Length: 405
Image (cartoon, rainbow, N blue to C red; front, side):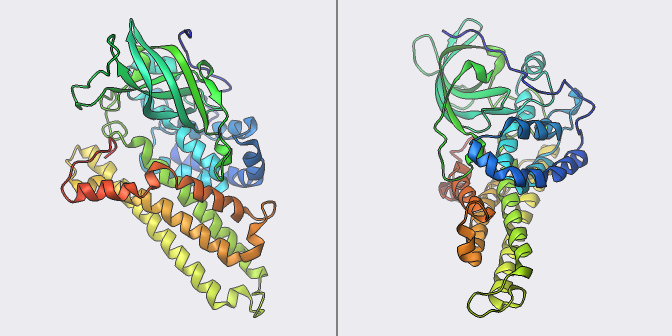
C-alpha cells in the first residue's frame, strides 16, 4: 500500500510571487513575448515528447498556470474567456505547449471544489500546474479518513511537469459495490488529487501529433488519498461562474485549435510574397487560387473564433446572474468548441495542400507538425462526432447524458 500523498511543489514560484504577471493583460503580454521562443523550440518539444524543463520554467514565469487562481488568494481569477485567450496565445507559439497550459491552469479551478484548508495545502503556490484524467477509470475504496485509490488512467497531458495529479474514480463501499450518488442516481464519481510522484508513469505517448504534450498513462494500486483531497464536480465549495457549472475545465479548450490555425494562416500568408506557382509562374500574391483560399480560410477562422468567444461570453454572463439556461444556451458553447476543432483541422489541411510538396518536410515546414497536431487533437472527446448526437438530443427535448452540459 502506498503512503499518503502530498503535492510536490517542484520548481514553482512561492505563493503570490511579485515577479510573476498577475492580470490578464500582463499574462497575455508575457505569453506574446514568449511566442517566438516557443516557435523556435517546437521541434525540440516534439522530439522530447513532453515540455522540456526550461520551457516549463518560462511558461510558469509568464503566469499561465495561475490563470484561474482566485483573487482572494492573490491570483488573477481570470474568466473562462480570458483563460481561452491565454491558451490561444500559447498555442500560437507551440500547439503542445498550448495544450499543456490549457490543462495546467486547471489548478485554480480544482481548488474551488475543495475546502479552503485542503485547497491551500494542495496548492501552496499560485503557479502549480495540474494534470490528470478526470473520468472515472479508477476505483476509490472508502476507508477511514479517505479512499484507497487504484487504477490506470490515460492522457495525462503535462504529467512530466505537473505538481498535482488528478485521477477520476468510481467510489466503492466496504461491500465492494459502487456507491450510488443520491444527487445523480449514478455511481459516485470523485476526483482524487495527489502528488504525481505517488503514481507510476507509463510511457505510452508515441503519437502522430501533440507529441510534446507528454500525455502518458499512469497507474497506482492502493494509494491512500485523504477525503479532503477528493471532490465531486457536483459539489463546489467556491461559488461563481467557474464552479457553478461543471464544464469550466473545457471552456478554454478552443484556444488550442484557434491559436494553431491562426499560426498556420499567418505562416502561409508570410510565405506568399516570395512564392510563385510552379506551373504558371504567377506570383502567389497575384494568384487567384491562393487569394481565394486564403480569404476563405480567414473567413472560416473568423466565424469559428467569434462563435467561441460570443458563446462563452453569454454563458459567463448567465452564470454570473444565476439565470436559468435553456437547451440552446446550454449546448451552444459545446457546438462552438466542436466547430473550432474541426474548422482548425480543415484550415491546416487546406493550407498544407496549398503549399504542396514544400509542406512535407518536417525539418523546414511547421505545416507538417500543425497537420499532425490538428489530426491528433480532433480525437479528443470534445471534437468527436458523438458531440453532435449528444447536443442534437438536447436540442430536440432529450436529456443530456453528458455531465458537462
